[in-house]
Every structure is written in C-alpha cells, then in structure tokens.
Length: 225
Image (cartoon, rainbow, N blue to C red):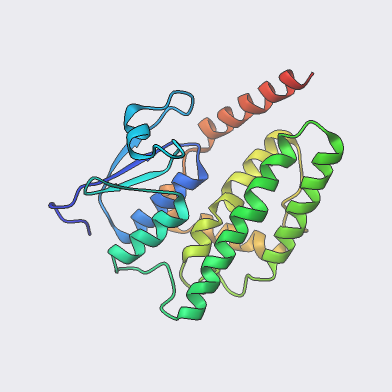
C-alpha cells in the first residue's frame, strides 16, 4: 500500500473509461489516493499544469511527478507497487498484454465511438465494420475466465471500455453490435469481469453515465440536422 510518505493523486472524470482503468488498478493494488474530479468542458489549472501537452484525463500524480495516458499509468503503477501484479512476469506474455491493450485502444475504442457519432452513413458503416472485425479478433483471445487466466490483468483492465461503456452507449443509440450471440466468449468474459468485486467497486454509477452520453448523443443529432 502507499505509505504516509507518498503523495498519490488522480485527476479524472467519472464518465471516462480511461480513468476507470486507473481506478481499477489502484483498487487492485490497495493504493490509497486522492481523487480530483475534472470538468471536461472547463479544464482546471491543475490539469493544465500536470498535463500541458494533451490537457486531458487521466493524470496520475505520484510525489508531484505527473504521468499521463492510461496504459502508461497502468505500467507505472505495476512497476512501483509490486503487490497483485497486473502484467505477467514472463517477457513474451508481457509483450502480448501490451500488444492486445494497444489493439483495444487503436482498433476498438475509436471505431466504437465513431459508429455512434458519425453523420455520413457510408463512413458510419465503415466504422461499424471496423469495430465488428476487431471485436471478432479479440473474441479469439479469450482463453479462460479472464484475459489474464484466473485473475484480471492488464488486458482485462484495458477492456473495461468493452465490458461497460460499449453496451451502455449502444443501448442509448439502439445499436445492437455487442451481444452474447455475436461474441459469446467476449460477452461471458464481460459478465465475469463486471462481477469481480474490485471492478464493481471501481465502476461509475450507470445512471449519470447514461445521462451524460444520452445528452451528448441528442446534442449530436440536433447539430447534424
């Protein structure tokens, strides 16, 4: 656990899946920290100070040293606090965890949001195809209870977006792209993952999350008319 001599802080936003990744890792590692909620439309001086390049959450601050980008933060946390490791000890397995986590960010996160927030129908269909293909590829990587086997690991934490955010956003927009029928192994994984005690305690409440994305979607539709 973080000692009294350590100052650990997280700048985040409740609606962000990237922030949720960090919260899960910190909970798993039993690290005490101060959480500071940020307003997405009004960047605080603290956020700009600690992340002057991208000016976005999450920002993890350890003894006044800031680290940005969720996957970088996860690796840092795992290197500093050795208990309950989230990356495998084996070098090859560790490289694979990094690869599939980057795959999720590069091929699934962006395409999934674009399936919802794209006006041009042809472009939208293209993004649906990209997201569907990527999810099918990831489906084949589920070999056990979790991506990490019997314990959640780096890839599971990265994929919280798939387990929690994709169904929520797609429910709002009536898109049925993620289902048990289409992705049985990924769907079963998502249920196991979301029911993990540490994950359940780290997830944001569904109601305000639905309200946020519903308002954003309705604003998008109004602007596109």
